[in-house]
Image (tube, rainbow, N blue to C red):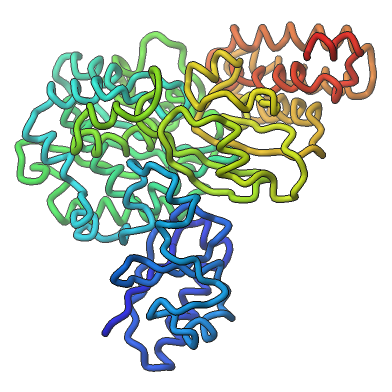
Length: 519
C-alpha cells in the first residue's frame, strides 16, 4: 500500500533543511523499494518543529520533527510510514497543544493541501465561496463582507466592506483589485505563508472582490525578497486559469476576472497603498497625498480596491460559511480571527491563528512559551518595526484593535517580537528612527528630516548630553512626525520611540523623577 508523506515547501521550513530532508527520504525510499508519495505542502506554522514529516494514517497525520537528513534511515527502521514510535515522534499533528488551541479559518488548508493543485484545493472546500458569490451577485457580496465585520489585516484596520462598497458605487469603468503583498514588517510572515501554502485562497478572494465591485483585473504586488511566494502565486494563477477559474467567464459565469503578479524592489514604503500604486505604475515609490482616495482615483487613475493578503484570503470563508458565522469570532469591533506571528526571542516561534481577544501575556507566555534564552521577557513589540513596545505591565491587554489603541499601541499586521531582559530599549528607539530615515521616500519633511534628527537626538541622550532637554526635544519631534507625516511610515515611527521612553526611561538615563512618573 502506498504511503503518503507530507513535507513543507514553505520558505521557513526550507531555511532549516526541509528540501534536504525531502531529498533524503526520496532516495532512501527508492533504495529500499518503498512505495512513497511525497506531497510538498505549506507549513503548519510550528517553526521550532521544522522540518516536520507528516505521515497519513487512518487516525490522522502522525508527525515527526524536527528531522535532519541523517534521521531518515533511523525513522524508516522504526516504522515511520506506519506511524511507528521514535524519539522524534510528535503524535497526531492536530493534538499538539500549539496547534490544537487555534481557530483556523484563513489558514484552514495551509499545511494540509498541495498548494499547486487546483483539484486538492477544491477537494478541501475551495471555491465554495466563489460559487455562492456568483449566485448572489455583486450587491449581495458587498453586504456580506460589510456584515462580517472584516477589517483590513494590513495594519490600519479599516472596514473591508466599506472600501468595497465605495469602489462598487463608482460609475461603470475599468476598475482594479490590488493585493498588497509587500510584507515588510519585522516578525511577520503570514502573507508569505498563505501565498506559499494556499495561494488559490488569495486568488479566490481577489476574484470575489472583482465581481463585487465590477473590476476585471487584479495585481498581486509581492516584495522581491519572496521568490518562493512569487513562484507559488504564478503557478497557482496558471492552474486557476487552466481550470476556468480565471478569464473571460469565471467558473462558467458571466463575470470576467484575470490577474498577474508584479514584483516590487523591496522598498518598505511601498507597503503604503499609494506608494504601492506608484510603483505598480512604473514610477518611483512615493506617497500620494489624499484625497483623492484610491477607491476613487487609484491604479492608472481608476477606482481601485487595495487590500492586504490576509483580508482577501478571509473573504472565501465569509462567503462560504456566511457573515454571521465569521462575525461570531472575536470581540468588540474586532471580528473574526487574526493570524498572529510569534517571533524574536521566543521559545515557540510560529503562526498562531485565533479569534481576537486573547491577552498579550497569554500569547507570549503560554502559546509562545516565553523566551528561547530562558530569561525573563522584558518587552514585546507588536505591529512591526513601527509598533509600540509593551512592558509586562501591559500583558493583560487583549489582542484587539481598540484595546491596543487605548494603550498607545497598534496591532498592525499581527507580528509579535519578544525581547528578554538583556535588551537596551534606547538602542531600540534609535533603530526605529534610523529605520525610518533609511526607508523614507523623502516626500514629506517630518518623515525625511525628522527621522534623521531623531537618530541624532537619541545618540545625544545615550551619550549623556543634556539628557532632560534633548528628551523634551525628542518628544516634540515625535509629536510633529506623528501628526505631520503624509503616511504611516513617519506617522507611526513615534510609537516605538515614545513607548520605549515611557515604559523604559532608565535605558535613556532618565532621572529618578522621570522614572517615578513613568511608573
